[in-house]
Length: 138
Image (cartoon, rainbow, N blue to C red):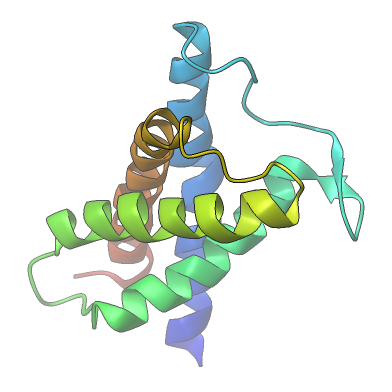
C-alpha cells in the first residue's frame, strides 16, 4: 500500500513540476492561449483546475507505474514513461475528457491538440518517473 501511495505522490507532483511548466512554455511561445496553474474552480468539488489535474496525475501515476512494473533497482523505462504519458493520457483527454466537458471532438483540430497534449503529458510521464525514483530510491 505504501508503494502505491508513493506512486500516487509521484504522479501528483509531476503535474506542478513538469506538466504545468511544459504548458507554461507552450503558452509563453504563443502555442496555447491558456496559462498554466489555472485557479478556476473545477467541477464537481470546486478546487482549482491545476489541483484537480494533480489529483488525476496521481491516479495516472499509480496506473502507469503499476503497468510498467516499475522497480527502484532496475534501469528506468524512460521511453515507456514518455510514451505512456504522451499517448495514453492524451488519447483519454481527447476522446473522453474533452467531450465530457463539452469541448467536442473535432477531427480537424485533432493533430494540433494531440501534439500539444503529447508534449505536456510526456513531460508528466518523465516527471512521474523522476519522482518515483526519488521517493522509492534506487
